[in-house]
Amino acid sequence: MMIRRKVNQAFTLIEIMVVLIIIAIMASFVIPSVINRPDEARLTKVKNDIMALEGALDLYKLDNGRYPSNSEGLKILISKEENTYLKRLPLDPWSHAYQYDNPGRNNKIDIYSFGADQAPGGSGIDKDIGNWNLNE
Image (cartoon, rainbow, N blue to C red; front, side, top):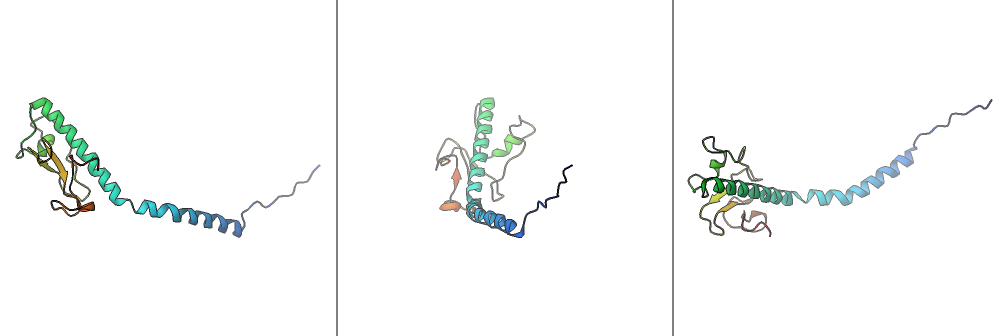
């Protein structure tokens, strides 16, 4: 009969420290690139929201032969009296309503957010983001 000895199979403190150091080094490269992207995430949200609003407005136009007037605004897309084109109106990443102009200054209709500063114009993250400059 063979007698088997139990072999202690555990990690040593040095092995654990080496693994932690490797993870820390990898995190030092990944974390800064993830942390520096909130502005990019906000811009992506605005673009997606504007495209969804534009699609709902196009459906409204197909059903009614026209885009909503300025006085009707985007709220008509969630109206219970008319067809409901959206379940709810999205807010921009800064928790403000999207703006709507008919006729628009840049397109037949303009859908836009004033950006972080909530004032017309601006540059960088404060720049107005609308259906006329989604590809910038």
